[in-house]
Image (cartoon, rainbow, N blue to C red; front, side):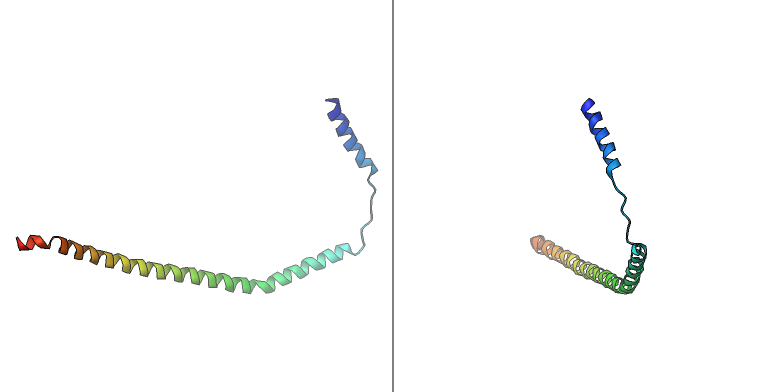
Length: 96
């Protein structure tokens, strides 16, 4: 337990050796300028993102419609195939 307390005390005492460093006087203005530039760039890019998003949505909806039409035709043709199979399979009954 004493080793843990010694480690804690050493850590707390290490804070005493920290020296204060003065920052560049224009750092605040630089940060604000970068933030303002970043928002203006994001505002200019926003329509591109919206157009891409709209294009993706249109593509997904188009694929869904194509898939629904394709599988609907397959379901109808499979029903026709079933009826043809049933007629051919049970055709001997008509001859009796």
